[in-house]
Length: 306
Image (spheres, rainbow, N blue to C red):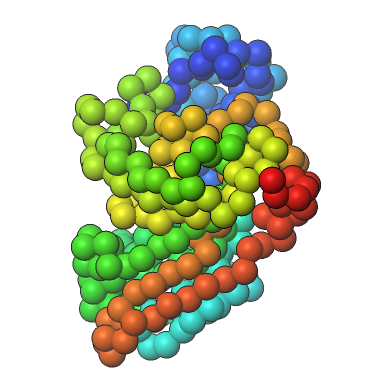
């Protein structure tokens, strides 16, 4: 199956196809998913579907997205919360809901569009024409610190730090359940899910090593507030690893509960701290951003720590 195609699971049975499609296709809103369906780009059994179709477990949908090359890449004057900036790098506190780079379904309104406006032509080209300056990526519904390079030398230096794990990324999250231990390490390889190509999974087949360190900040009734440090940077790593040990992230439809919890429709995950060695000066740069409002509102709803 193509990466955009998917098979309906038992837990997803009975859901409308437009809602399901919006979850399976990264960067797609429900309205964008509906436009795909209306244009005949979503097939079941070789035939176009209607947006109000109720899915059945085992349904195999074929999704034909427009080529990425058709998506224009233009500067957009979108406000950015710049945490650090100089001639080589820029670090932004990305809001929840912002896609990092253009993709089918999100041709604009992305972090890249905003960076093109803010930085002009001063972004590296190492990441390719559709991802100028982007050194690493965080998911649409993950908020927090992300670094971009303003020239190729800085990009290559930061990429090397990603590879040797000297670029340190620390996240905070709220997970379901009370973790018994105060801290732990998850060392489990991550690869594509064997039946759902839009998901990742802990699997020994066609996978790459993945290591996440976690520690409990506070425990609540039925939930835990944790800190995670990435040793590697696999797609959806924290989300996959925490679900693997039985503690999926609150609000994570893909790897956790299939319905909203505490008002969240997206994982409660914030990239709070970032440490890297400046590519020119060699200085150690350490940055931190406060927890965003959506995160603190969830903590209020959870009440007092136990």
